[in-house]
Structures are given as C-alpha cells and as structure tokens.
Amino acid sequence: MPLVSKLFRDNPRLQACLVSHAAHVTPGSKGQHVALIQYAVLTLEGGKIAGSEIALRNYGPTTTAAVLAYKRRRKIINPSYQTSADNIVGRMTIAALDREMALREFARGPTFQYAL
Image 1 (tube, rainbow, N blue to C red):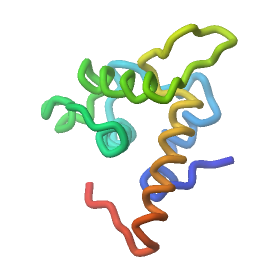
Image 2: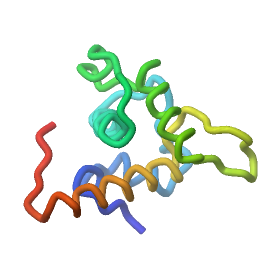
Image 3: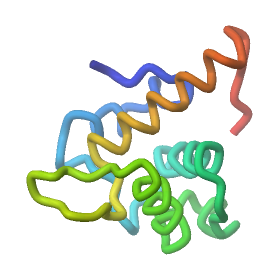
C-alpha cells in the first residue's frame, strides 16, 4: 500500500523507502525526503533538530536523535532481528510516520496545506 499522507505521498524517495530495504534513510542522507521526515518527526514527537541540518536537509546527528526518540516512544522495532530501536527510517518507520501524519491531516480538514 502506498504512502497516503499529503506530506509524503508525492515523494518517490519515501515511497521507495516503504518497499525497499535499499531505500532506507540512514545517517548522512540528504534531500527533500529528509526535510519531510524532519518536519514529520518535529510535528509528531517534538524535540530539536539543528537549524543547519534542516537548512541542508541533512540526516545528521540531531535528526538521527529525533528519529530514534520517535521510534523508542512508539516501540518501532522488528523483533525478528532487533531488541531496541535503531536510527534509520525504514519500512516500519515511514509507515508509522505516514499513518500519524495522515490522521493529523484528516483532523485538520480537507483544505489543509503544508508550507515547507
């Protein structure tokens, strides 16, 4: 099932992340897809991400920490090989972010628009 939130649905890189292990978002990644993840994590989890990482759309140390906090709070782990959350955005994480963002968008109404 594809990503459905307005925030993520038109981003091919994040759509790929949902279905491909090779497309997981890892520390050092850069681009619009990282900016979308940063926005979602800050919106849903709070915390802080360094302005330099946001400006460069960089999956750096503070973005990594924010994603890890998001995953820990929601217990996003794959029990077949993990005992604790990691700092990557893979299938389970992007699906959780998408689901939560879609619910938030729905609550705000059909005309809600993002200004990134």
